[in-house]
Image (tube, rainbow, N blue to C red; front, side):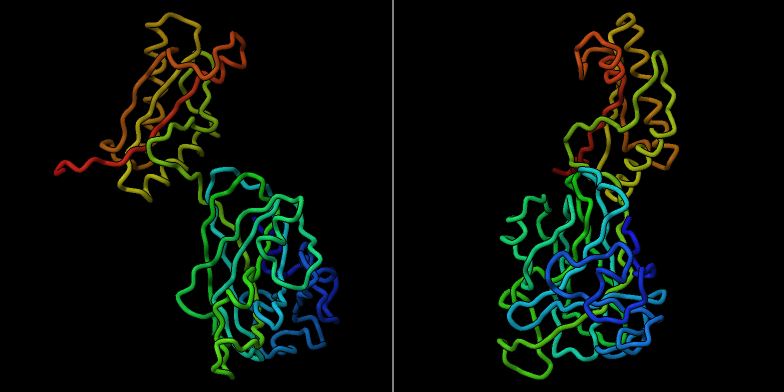
Length: 339
């Protein structure tokens, strides 16, 4: 979901430093920090594998970006990219990337984070994009999310793979990456100076940025209406889009074996109570059978029909009736029989 995540597509082969905005397709710098673009096509100090910061082969392809995650006076550089589509509210995504510490770095950090924004950022500062700097904008942004770190990102030879999972707010169109912490708050180790207050330079190459869809985020004991599982009048067969929604539910249950699911079917107000009871049971049953067909143990699923007794919309319109022809589910944890 990240455009040009490997930096392969470019408008111009880099010949000038600090020119990511003009050289790499889709990428930009959200602040006055001057992020660099490297490509094998360049015959200058922005080439690959040799460049002005040392030697590094790409993780993949023929290009990567370079930026300071730590520098004196809280100087920072960032990268910003539009996503291929707006993220879905309440759905989970995995952000991944590869980084390598440049040879000509004084030290290493273990602070790298991400922020998502509704629109592209253009903040007139060379310093870190602090919470205050981000919230001063009229553009909606997410809270900072840090990549987890077991140690310092100090490998100058190999690429380190980092991942973090997010739950979308529903407005995210742009991704911003960098170190959003001040020097005082950054975990930094200086290779040349044993003083904890040393302010050297940490320059990193970054490549292979990806954002992968993981599915919805479901909370136990909350009622969810299954997306796209709205039935045609007098029918209980599943439409193609409904099957993808059920695949998301199945995948979540597979990853969370401590959960079971209760399915409830519902109808509109047309027809007799007796008929609607039967039809709603058939709708719930068709969902349950599909989940079991995917591999869900029958002991982890129950289904029940409620007819037209629990409408979502009581208006006497075709639109309201279609909304009421639905299937809902609730996930709950297994109770411990020994308690």
